[in-house]
Length: 168
Ligand SMILES: C[S@@+](CC[C@H](N)C(=O)[O-])C[C@H]1O[C@@H](n2cnc3c(N)ncnc32)[C@H](O)[C@@H]1O
Image (cartoon, rainbow, N blue to C red; front, side, top):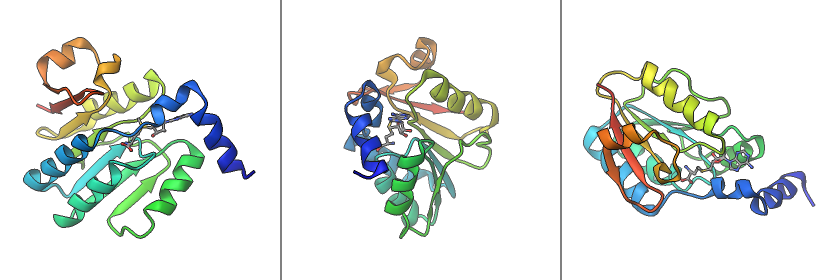
């Protein structure tokens, strides 16, 4: 059995497997819609694997001439995603977290599986995103996000729970 397959099976049988779950299709539709109306030039996705949101993001981005940077920190997941999106000229699969979000008009925060990892992405976005930039946060229902943030922003009950935040 190959190393990648062994690791994948281990994840699937592991508590951490819940973090490999994809966001709902409705989330892809919302993100694509935001791209259509915002017409950003640069989009970020934090947490690529298994890439279900990367596809609608990449397509909508291509339609408006935008570039998508998508971050996958788990090495074997990164390799898989790099292969999957090799043919997409406007998609960069990155192995290192984005710490400066200044150029990204739209960001999808969907990394895992630790609270620290998700909070690091959110803190970097909060500190560096330009005024007017929008972040969409998945898994809000799992208690990742401070209740105050949920109360003050647009919450959408997708199942996992989405939060749409605009940098002031
Ligand atoms: C929350 S989802 C991202 C879903 C993706 N945006 C989509 O909708 O298809 C999975 C994330 O959890 C992380 N993850 C899953 N299993 C993991 C594991 N065993 N160890 C570390 N990270 C893991 C991966 O880094 C991955 O980016």
